[in-house]
Image (cartoon, rainbow over all chains, first blue to last red; front, side, top):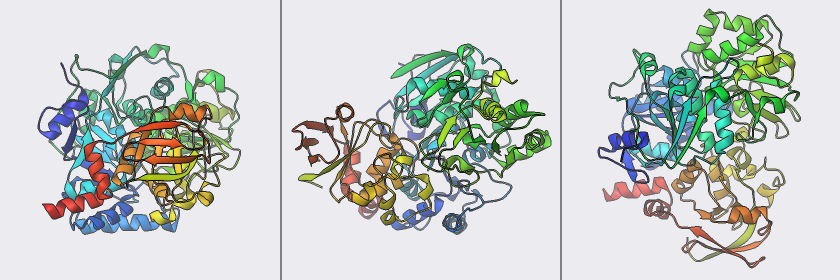
Amino acid sequence: MGRTFAEYVLGRAAGHPVSANEVVTVEPDFCMSHDNTGPISRTFKRIGVKRVWDPNRLVVILDHGVPAPSSDHAINHKEAREFMRGQGAPHFYDVTSGGGVCHQKFCEEGFALPGQVVIGSDSHTCTYGAFGTFAAGIGRTEMAAAWATGAIWLKVPESFRIDVSGELRDGVSAKDFILKVMGDVRSDGADYMSVEFHGEGISAMSVAERMTLCNLGIEMGAKNAVCKPDRKVFDFIRGREKSSDWEALWADPDAEYARALSYDLSGITPGVARPHTVDNYAPVESARGVRIDQAFIGTCTNGRLEDLRDAARILKGRRAAVRTIVIPASWEVYRAAMRDGTLDVLIDAGCVVCNPGCGPCLGAHMGTLAPGETCISTANRNFKGRMGDKESFIYLASPLTVAASALRGEISDPREVM
Amino acid sequence: MSGILKGRAWVFGDDVDTDLIYHNKYLAETDPRNMPQYSFEYYPGKESFAREVKPGDFVVAGRNFGCGSSREHAVHCLKEAGVPVILAETCSRIYYRNAINNGYPVLFVKGISSAIRDGCIKDGDELEVELETGTIRDMTSGRSYHGDAVSDLEREIMSAGGLIPYLKSRRKEG
């Protein structure tokens, strides 16, 4: 019997072969945390350990509220800053033009590496699976414990195989595909599982598109989500990698799966997740004409250069009918979009371009919603009230669909305006 | 925690996400003792929970309780309010780990999701819960349910009072 990706990577980390449902204790290759580093550091101090087990393994990236929108946020930032300095931990990304959304920065900085184990005190840590990393979100208490001990207990998850063939048609993107998958699997259909994306359809996708897929693994309940690391990944990490101890690992063809699905990308059409759950999928036609008050393009799901270019493709030479907020996922993305003219196109179309960070995705600042307002967003969650008032509404969609909707002031099929 | 726990039920549906339990608006709060006042503020029909919940009351929910964010606030706000245990059909992976690591029990109760949907268990029902055996009796309706026990490692962490006290006790032994 062959092994799954999760069995290979956790077996490598544990130092012996492992099988699904076994509990192993492993040393994480990197530990990611963000604005919650301050509270984690307080819990860490309660354990009674002075130094973290390995300061080089901590990666802290401020992004949830940057620059600080309130003194409470500022206090959390200050604590994180002082803690990292006090520990002599070098991988600290402060509120500077070297920052960005934690998951984007983590990958750009070469911490997401094939065959490694990463834990992060953020649920979208699963994004790094796009690089063949076993990456799972955990809570703050667990992070404090991992810093102290260099160890975390993990149940080797059962695996869920998704085979993907065919090619996306013009006007359709990876986001449309994963929204459809989430609608089929439902928000707990991959609970505690490792989701593996297989097939030619995935090989043909860019690293950015694979990050979008893996990012949304958690919205199906997955522990982690992963794509096979290939040349595109190796090219991306070359010159960036923060560790040489990585190894491209992948599932055997005869590995055992708890669940499997297959999709042909050529059959995917633009779609949305309607309020207030991520699995409330509908083809864009059935939401067509819903009036919107705001459009938002950004986040760890869809704030990369490819996504901003998609939006610019729709909005070029036109004018958004509603307020449209654009937040590049990092300053690297920001600069690239500035250099190639993408930002000019978006600004000419009336978009407000904000500094990299999570922005209004979690309702902190930069575009929160008033009662009764509706936003169409490229983010990953449309929970009730997530972006502001509890009587507001969020639709999730691809950057193309969000831009097309911004153009018309109502939910629209991008294929009609391209 | 042993013996029979008695309290009222607060009943929720499936897919109760972390923003419904504890909204991201209050994430900058870091003291668990200040968290109960925000519990379920965004859950339609449960806006009064934070004001009216009494220590000993139970949270009863369907499938996938605590889906979404990794925030531990969603565990703290209920634990600090004195809710002794969550009774749910299933809960999300991260929520479950956060609960265990804070020494907070979650019982997985078969059939509770459909019982909620069918109105067999309602807000205000008087419940008796035995954590040792996983037995749940609804004294109002006369129905019984059964919750699954946790694994050995999880039990060890919980009986120490959570991951931090567990690690501290292990350091002393080592």
